[in-house]
Image (cartoon, rainbow, N blue to C red; front, side, top):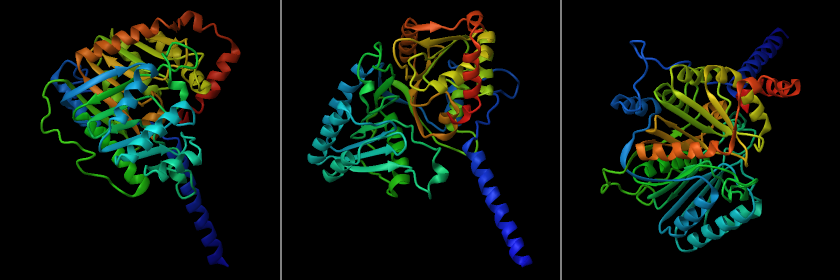
Length: 429
């Protein structure tokens, strides 16, 4: 009897420990509180050679020359080029998407993938089991035609410990030579010019060069987890022996969950801390933790023109908007200028520092992207692309409302209640 009671207590303690550690894992945050140098000064600016070396080391992402990059800011620019590239595939297509649903865009994708699979192209599609809602018959039609399809981290009891870790990643690689990443998905809401209601504003990149190999490696890592099969070979990783040493210095960061700080967190915090002149952040779900907010505020206080553009009244996730607004005053008081996009859902995720360091990808400025999700970001150290993204930012704020501190402080009790209520669960939004 005594042994039975002791065993029962012991089992209860183990269960309690597992429950507690699981809960803590599900709400973990990012541990980096500051970015500093040994002499107490600022980290190198983006114009100093030491910045590149530091960023490569902390983000674990080598930057290489020889890349050609095009920036697209809406569906009208993105999808015609994407369909053309997919239809031109001769050896392999690898595609990983978070958000997928049925509609005209999904029908076009199926038509293209079936055509290429029928022509002997090896086609792989990996979709997030939480973010995607393709009907079963859609998936089966792809499989029957020879497309390799798998869900990423399906919602099962054995995989319950990974439920919060989603593949928010965006990957398209064609023949190992051409890559796409950004915030786009497979849904009709991404069609259009980004200036009309229900035509989402998003930023995506198409690129060639050595960065494509890094994007492909991100897909291979996720495919290996989902299927148990790790893919290699020339069809996926095209040779870069004839690489052009000109072009854009760039690399693809693959952010993954970690028990400690993540590559995504270290990339973002070092980018903020290295700003000297201008820091323009465009992010659809802007709910940074207090330490990252403090770093953004510190940039403004040291004289950096610090601005944030985020989603406004047309957001698709009201809770995130309100949770972000709950801490606007901290930033506004420091001199940060905040804008909310008016015309439609603003879904872009980009930043540009001092017109030279730029990034476009799938990563939101929230705890979920920084701590829990698989993410991809094309990082670029290039003045031409930096200027391109700065010009786009200034165009975007022409379609946005600037949040003025004095006016914002006058908002009503109901607005404040929604903000504080949603901010209570900011870690998991």
